[in-house]
Amino acid sequence: MSYKERSIWVSLAITLYIWFNYFSELYWSVQQHTLTTSSMKSALLTVVIMTIALEILHHIVIAIIDNKNANYDEDERDKQISLIGNQNAYYILSFTAIAAVIHLLFPLMSQGLVDALSLPSEYAIINIIIFGALTAEITKFSTQIFYYRRGF
Amino acid sequence: MEKKIVNNIRRLRFDADEMTQQMLADVVGVSRQTIVAIEKDKYSPSLEVAFKISEYFNVPLDTVFKYR
Image (cartoon, rainbow over all chains, first blue to last red; front, top):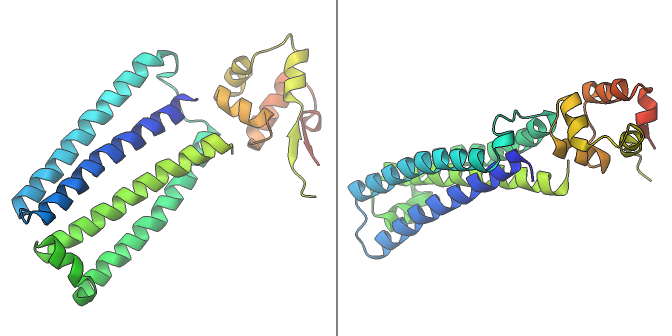
Protein backbone atom coordinates (compact mmCIF):
# COMPACT_ATOMS: atom_id res chain seq x y z
CA MET A 1 0.00 0.00 0.00
CA SER A 2 1.45 3.35 -1.03
CA TYR A 3 2.02 6.28 1.32
CA LYS A 4 -0.76 8.21 -0.41
CA GLU A 5 -3.27 5.35 -0.19
CA ARG A 6 -2.50 4.77 3.48
CA SER A 7 -3.00 8.47 4.10
CA ILE A 8 -6.39 8.40 2.35
CA TRP A 9 -7.56 5.40 4.43
CA VAL A 10 -6.68 7.25 7.65
CA SER A 11 -8.37 10.47 6.46
CA LEU A 12 -11.51 8.50 5.62
CA ALA A 13 -11.51 6.88 9.06
CA ILE A 14 -11.01 10.27 10.77
CA THR A 15 -13.81 11.87 8.72
CA LEU A 16 -16.24 9.03 9.48
CA TYR A 17 -15.37 9.00 13.18
CA ILE A 18 -15.73 12.76 13.70
CA TRP A 19 -18.91 13.20 11.69
CA PHE A 20 -20.53 10.08 13.10
CA ASN A 21 -20.01 11.64 16.54
CA TYR A 22 -21.45 14.96 15.35
CA PHE A 23 -24.57 13.55 13.73
CA SER A 24 -25.24 11.04 16.52
CA GLU A 25 -24.98 13.93 19.02
CA LEU A 26 -27.36 15.97 16.86
CA TYR A 27 -29.76 13.01 16.59
CA TRP A 28 -29.87 12.36 20.34
CA SER A 29 -30.27 16.07 21.09
CA VAL A 30 -33.25 16.17 18.73
CA GLN A 31 -34.72 13.04 20.35
CA GLN A 32 -34.34 14.48 23.85
CA HIS A 33 -35.46 17.98 22.76
CA THR A 34 -32.24 19.49 24.09
CA LEU A 35 -30.94 20.83 20.77
CA THR A 36 -30.21 24.54 20.95
CA THR A 37 -28.28 26.94 18.77
CA SER A 38 -25.43 27.08 21.26
CA SER A 39 -25.21 23.27 21.62
CA MET A 40 -25.01 22.96 17.83
CA LYS A 41 -22.32 25.64 17.65
CA SER A 42 -20.28 23.88 20.30
CA ALA A 43 -20.67 20.53 18.47
CA LEU A 44 -19.45 22.19 15.26
CA LEU A 45 -16.50 23.77 17.05
CA THR A 46 -15.59 20.35 18.45
CA VAL A 47 -15.68 18.94 14.92
CA VAL A 48 -13.34 21.65 13.61
CA ILE A 49 -10.85 21.29 16.48
CA MET A 50 -10.89 17.47 16.34
CA THR A 51 -10.44 17.47 12.55
CA ILE A 52 -7.40 19.77 12.73
CA ALA A 53 -5.86 17.89 15.68
CA LEU A 54 -6.42 14.39 14.25
CA GLU A 55 -5.22 15.35 10.76
CA ILE A 56 -1.98 16.81 12.20
CA LEU A 57 -1.52 13.70 14.35
CA HIS A 58 -2.25 11.43 11.39
CA HIS A 59 0.41 13.11 9.22
CA ILE A 60 2.98 12.97 12.02
CA VAL A 61 2.31 9.29 12.78
CA ILE A 62 2.33 8.24 9.12
CA ALA A 63 5.54 10.20 8.52
CA ILE A 64 7.18 8.45 11.50
CA ILE A 65 5.99 4.97 10.46
CA ASP A 66 6.86 5.42 6.79
CA ASN A 67 9.66 8.01 7.10
CA LYS A 68 11.28 6.85 3.85
CA ASN A 69 8.29 8.15 1.86
CA ALA A 70 7.41 11.10 4.09
CA ASN A 71 8.41 13.61 1.41
CA TYR A 72 6.66 11.64 -1.30
CA ASP A 73 5.16 13.79 -4.06
CA GLU A 74 2.07 12.72 -5.97
CA ASP A 75 2.91 11.08 -9.29
CA GLU A 76 0.70 11.14 -12.41
CA ARG A 77 -1.38 8.13 -11.32
CA ASP A 78 -2.04 9.66 -7.89
CA LYS A 79 -3.10 12.91 -9.58
CA GLN A 80 -5.49 11.13 -11.94
CA ILE A 81 -7.06 9.13 -9.13
CA SER A 82 -7.34 12.31 -7.09
CA LEU A 83 -9.05 14.05 -10.03
CA ILE A 84 -11.67 11.32 -10.35
CA GLY A 85 -12.32 11.51 -6.61
CA ASN A 86 -12.71 15.29 -6.79
CA GLN A 87 -15.01 14.99 -9.80
CA ASN A 88 -17.37 12.62 -7.95
CA ALA A 89 -17.27 14.86 -4.88
CA TYR A 90 -18.13 17.84 -7.07
CA TYR A 91 -21.36 16.16 -8.28
CA ILE A 92 -22.46 15.65 -4.67
CA LEU A 93 -21.55 19.23 -3.72
CA SER A 94 -23.49 20.57 -6.72
CA PHE A 95 -26.52 18.53 -5.66
CA THR A 96 -26.11 19.91 -2.12
CA ALA A 97 -26.02 23.48 -3.40
CA ILE A 98 -29.25 22.84 -5.34
CA ALA A 99 -30.85 21.26 -2.26
CA ALA A 100 -29.89 24.30 -0.14
CA VAL A 101 -31.34 26.69 -2.74
CA ILE A 102 -34.55 24.62 -2.95
CA HIS A 103 -34.76 24.74 0.84
CA LEU A 104 -34.46 28.54 0.72
CA LEU A 105 -36.87 29.06 -2.17
CA PHE A 106 -39.45 26.46 -1.18
CA PRO A 107 -39.22 26.12 2.61
CA LEU A 108 -42.42 24.07 2.69
CA MET A 109 -40.62 21.18 0.95
CA SER A 110 -38.16 20.82 3.82
CA GLN A 111 -40.48 21.87 6.62
CA GLY A 112 -40.24 18.38 8.11
CA LEU A 113 -36.48 18.72 8.54
CA VAL A 114 -36.78 22.18 10.13
CA ASP A 115 -39.48 20.91 12.51
CA ALA A 116 -37.42 17.87 13.42
CA LEU A 117 -34.33 19.94 14.20
CA SER A 118 -36.38 22.52 16.13
CA LEU A 119 -33.82 25.13 15.21
CA PRO A 120 -34.04 28.33 13.16
CA SER A 121 -34.23 27.68 9.41
CA GLU A 122 -30.65 28.85 8.78
CA TYR A 123 -29.37 26.04 11.01
CA ALA A 124 -31.27 23.55 8.91
CA ILE A 125 -29.45 24.93 5.86
CA ILE A 126 -26.13 24.65 7.69
CA ASN A 127 -26.83 20.97 8.37
CA ILE A 128 -27.90 20.33 4.78
CA ILE A 129 -24.64 21.87 3.57
CA ILE A 130 -22.56 20.04 6.20
CA PHE A 131 -24.19 16.74 5.34
CA GLY A 132 -23.60 17.33 1.61
CA ALA A 133 -19.98 18.37 2.14
CA LEU A 134 -19.41 15.32 4.35
CA THR A 135 -20.96 12.97 1.80
CA ALA A 136 -18.80 14.58 -0.89
CA GLU A 137 -15.68 14.08 1.23
CA ILE A 138 -16.52 10.44 1.92
CA THR A 139 -17.28 9.91 -1.79
CA LYS A 140 -13.90 11.44 -2.71
CA PHE A 141 -11.94 9.20 -0.34
CA SER A 142 -13.97 6.10 -1.26
CA THR A 143 -13.48 6.70 -4.99
CA GLN A 144 -9.74 7.14 -4.52
CA ILE A 145 -9.47 3.98 -2.41
CA PHE A 146 -11.55 2.07 -4.97
CA TYR A 147 -9.18 3.04 -7.81
CA TYR A 148 -6.05 2.35 -5.74
CA ARG A 149 -7.40 -1.12 -4.87
CA ARG A 150 -8.87 -2.06 -8.25
CA GLY A 151 -6.06 -0.48 -10.22
CA PHE A 152 -6.11 2.43 -12.57
CA MET B 1 -12.41 -8.31 -28.24
CA GLU B 2 -11.40 -4.94 -26.87
CA LYS B 3 -7.79 -3.95 -27.39
CA LYS B 4 -5.62 -2.76 -24.55
CA ILE B 5 -2.10 -1.60 -23.85
CA VAL B 6 0.19 -4.37 -22.62
CA ASN B 7 3.87 -4.15 -21.75
CA ASN B 8 7.14 -6.06 -21.34
CA ILE B 9 8.53 -4.09 -18.44
CA ARG B 10 8.88 -7.10 -16.20
CA ARG B 11 10.94 -8.90 -18.84
CA LEU B 12 13.03 -5.80 -19.50
CA ARG B 13 13.72 -5.39 -15.78
CA PHE B 14 14.73 -9.01 -15.54
CA ASP B 15 17.13 -8.58 -18.46
CA ALA B 16 18.58 -5.45 -16.86
CA ASP B 17 20.28 -7.37 -14.03
CA GLU B 18 16.96 -8.02 -12.28
CA MET B 19 16.38 -4.37 -11.67
CA THR B 20 13.87 -3.76 -8.87
CA GLN B 21 10.55 -1.98 -9.34
CA GLN B 22 11.71 0.68 -6.89
CA MET B 23 14.84 1.39 -8.95
CA LEU B 24 12.78 1.80 -12.11
CA ALA B 25 10.27 3.97 -10.24
CA ASP B 26 13.09 6.25 -9.06
CA VAL B 27 14.48 6.51 -12.59
CA VAL B 28 11.18 7.51 -14.19
CA GLY B 29 9.90 9.59 -11.27
CA VAL B 30 6.82 7.67 -10.16
CA SER B 31 5.97 5.55 -7.12
CA ARG B 32 6.72 1.83 -6.96
CA GLN B 33 2.95 1.20 -6.81
CA THR B 34 2.57 2.93 -10.17
CA ILE B 35 5.20 0.62 -11.71
CA VAL B 36 3.32 -2.34 -10.19
CA ALA B 37 0.05 -1.08 -11.72
CA ILE B 38 1.71 -0.55 -15.14
CA GLU B 39 3.26 -4.04 -15.11
CA LYS B 40 -0.11 -5.60 -14.30
CA ASP B 41 -1.68 -3.65 -17.21
CA LYS B 42 -3.95 -1.87 -14.73
CA TYR B 43 -2.65 1.58 -15.54
CA SER B 44 -1.56 3.08 -18.86
CA PRO B 45 1.19 5.63 -18.19
CA SER B 46 1.48 9.03 -19.82
CA LEU B 47 3.56 9.32 -22.98
CA GLU B 48 6.26 11.05 -20.96
CA VAL B 49 6.64 8.14 -18.54
CA ALA B 50 6.38 5.63 -21.41
CA PHE B 51 9.24 7.39 -23.24
CA LYS B 52 11.31 7.59 -20.07
CA ILE B 53 10.95 3.83 -19.58
CA SER B 54 11.87 3.00 -23.16
CA GLU B 55 14.78 5.47 -23.06
CA TYR B 56 16.07 3.91 -19.85
CA PHE B 57 16.04 0.38 -21.29
CA ASN B 58 17.38 1.77 -24.58
CA VAL B 59 14.69 0.08 -26.68
CA PRO B 60 11.99 1.47 -29.00
CA LEU B 61 8.69 2.40 -27.42
CA ASP B 62 6.83 -0.40 -29.19
CA THR B 63 9.17 -2.94 -27.62
CA VAL B 64 8.04 -1.82 -24.19
CA PHE B 65 4.36 -1.20 -24.93
CA LYS B 66 2.02 -2.87 -27.37
CA TYR B 67 -1.59 -2.13 -28.26
CA ARG B 68 -3.36 -5.40 -28.94
